[in-house]
Image (cartoon, rainbow, N blue to C red; front, side):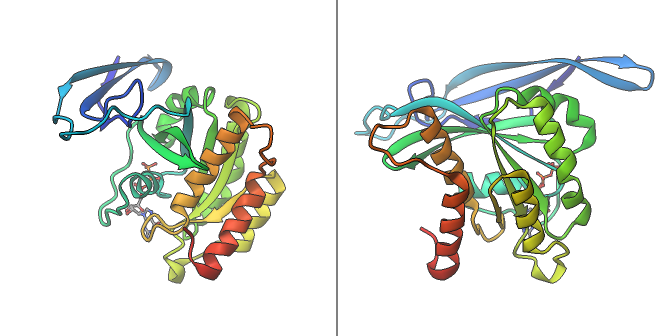
Length: 265
Ligand SMILES: Nc1nc2c(ncn2[C@@H]2O[C@H](COP(=O)(O)OP(=O)(O)OP(=O)(O)O)[C@@H](O)[C@H]2O)c(=O)[nH]1
């Protein structure tokens, strides 16, 4: 048995999460040893709340109820070092921590509430380890994912070449119709670019998925990527009678154009 405590986190606002309570998780992975390697058998997640970490601000109201209440499970996948954790930290906390690279161990998640078209959508964003040795653990989480953000690093050719293998794994383990978005990350490092933006576009078109380049460092397109996912999931969950149909690829293309011409809001 392998016990990991990858993270602690504060839950987002909502009926089943109190933002003033520290939620802790313990990941228990059952593995058996076969010859010289371990085979993954099952994973169990234990969640507990050790107690309040701060009193609610005086005069604060109860957290507003979600209009769209589902837990929308979104998973970040891609080779080790492409910037999955950095992208999530940029989206969640609006910051980039430069310097030493510490590879993710196993898998962990962050809750984030976003507002799209006046509706609050709760995203549960799972950050996975890109290293091969964690692959059997992360596969187990694909099945009930509603969306997958698949990253490569524009300065690393093999991370781009591996995208086809990642897509094959997604098609094998994830549910049919899962929302997939391809992201070419580290777009700020133009001097070391080895993958042209057109190559990302072509690959995405071949698989019929939306594409954009991002930078976890500058924040470029980070919010757009998650908001587009939230919009698509909200739309899928319950289209209102007078609501126009939503096409995530068209939306991403129009927003990318807007952001290049006049800064995205
Ligand atoms: N310049 C630049 N560096 C980045 C960017 N995103 C991530 N990095 C750096 O790339 C390295 C790897 O980033 P991580 O976010 O840890 O990569 P990861 O995909 O989560 O890696 P695993 O946890 O091993 O799967 C770190 O040193 C980051 O600071 C980016 O957009 N621009």
